[in-house]
Length: 258
Length: 291
Image (tube, rainbow over all chains, first blue to last red; front, side):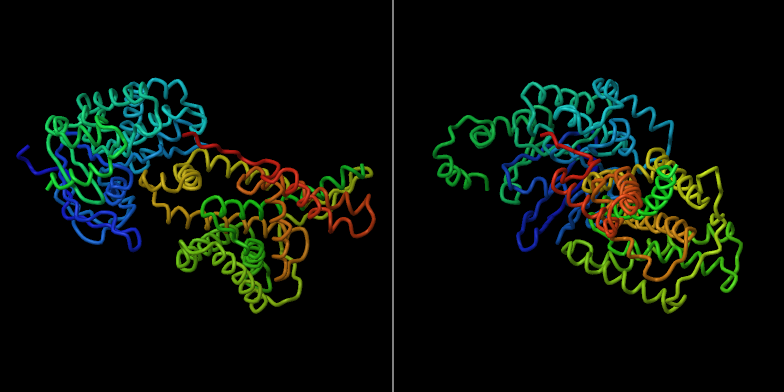
């Protein structure tokens, strides 16, 4: 981990109108690794991904990708540089077939042979998509749509994949299945991932490094093992405390992470 | 025989309505804005062709002028989006509606200034006169219009299914956010949809002018085409064409078999009936997002 990181975010600040959603975030993702960003609803995780992929423009700060500052670039140019964003809630193209959805994932590429090869690779990891290749994406189940969204992202042959809550709304069994595939993709294909999650236990199981976000700031970071062992993470994100009285406890604890 | 004759002339009118309705739906699906100047686009397309082809203007042979017309109308649509509509991007829908209504006025009066307000006829190779088949009198223009529309529909269908840009247009209209995530330059795609709407309007205009005279107020058939688009289910391309055909066919039959005045009312009566009983239109594409 001594090499320069693939993706480096420095002091990023992003606003939703007058509301500051990201308050000076810095983080690093190294090539071949999986980095997770944990946090509750409204912590700014999605905004962070949207700022990296160019859907939102930052007010301040830098996003260095392979040493180049891409902050504020048009989204289609960000995609061209090799960053793909698998959005929250799948967001497939509902009236197009599975195969057409995958073809659109490769929109910015023009090497036919490579595209066909990657499609076969996606079908190998997600055999259900091959079975349903001519079906409209809107008629797939939630889990299948999530697989399609990930497969569509892979079609870009990305240098880094930004995954926004792939576990959202899926049954625990499906979550296990999808995360197992993500793990294989990382180890077999070497796909670098930045994973935003609320489901801390599966996310930390997959990731090498983790960051914890709260109210637009990074409040904690470290290796997955370290985070998993942390008392704060255990009580807030891994569900070892009851919900009642959480507000008070949180306030006390918050002081411990600075 | 009489029924067949009414049917064919109704279908020919309906094709023109359908093509204008197609323009409405193309732009609506892609940009979620309604271009109320679509009828005037059609009028403009007809006048541009007339200006290039008619001997009193430039007198270019029709088949040479045709690609030129498509380039001009395509560029017109694209630039309109680039210069005017992008300025109101993200604004209230009402802004776009008012803007396109105003645009319709501008086009109407500009055409009047350039080509005059008198009805003129286009020197079109489709205006072939009539053919007698026993009792049946067929306007050859009507037949040509139906065939042309059929071919154009086929071409558009292939374009949306087979080409990358056609697929990108579908994607951007179905899920704009996801299109951004896939690296599709959505704004440029919108511009191309406007260009396509301009070209379809040009075809509609040429077909319209082949049936009779054209004047700057011809764009008002846009209102009927709008009704057709709603009947077909705003948001469905085949629906727009079929809606156009239905409106076109209803008119001559109402004129022939119902008391006077009914033919003007019939399309709108149907519109109200559709809105009451099938508010999403006859051929709506229903999409349900699964969570």
